[in-house]
Amino acid sequence: MKARHKRFLLIAVALGLLAAATALVLNAFRDNLVFFHTPSEVAEGKAPQGRPFRVGGMVLPGSLERDADGLTVRFIISDTAQIVPVVYRGALPDLFKETKGAVAQGSLGADGVFVATEVLAKHDENYMPPEAQDAIDRAHNTAKTLQ
Image 1 (cartoon, rainbow, N blue to C red):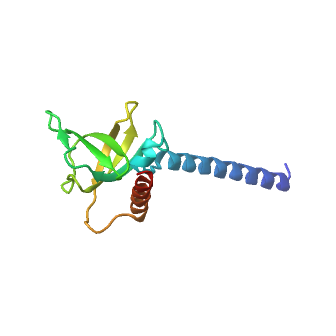
Image 2 (spheres, rainbow, N blue to C red; image 1 turned 90 degrees about the horizontal axis):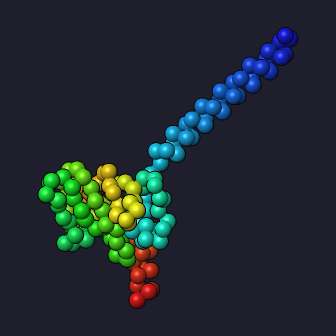
Image 3 (cartoon, rainbow, N blue to C red; image 1 turned 120 degrees about the horizontal axis):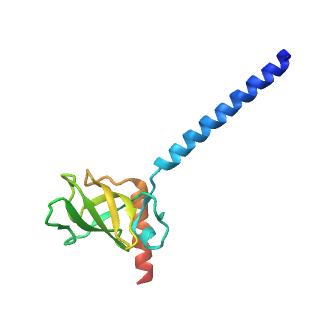
């Protein structure tokens, strides 16, 4: 085999390995990517079915219920226009309370109940991520328009 053919073979093998590594990295990235959706987007069917995502908003007053086992919690998250019932099994963050902001990560069940695997509480009264604030503002403006 000529030196030129060996170089061509080496370059082809290197490109093949690079393509395989890139495919593996992109596949792993896609599997771990979790998007944020508002309750309005969930109600409109824009949230993924059968894939984990995050839903956030305010915990409605009077919606927090604890099951007898002490670990299962049910509550409702709202963006002032729509609501999403959430069920979570585990310890809630210390700052989690009704009328405060929360983000739940999990997936939507066939019955429309969001089954959370993780719940995060808003840590500061004055801060909200710009994407979440924008989504809540849009939902609130849409609700005013429909009235």
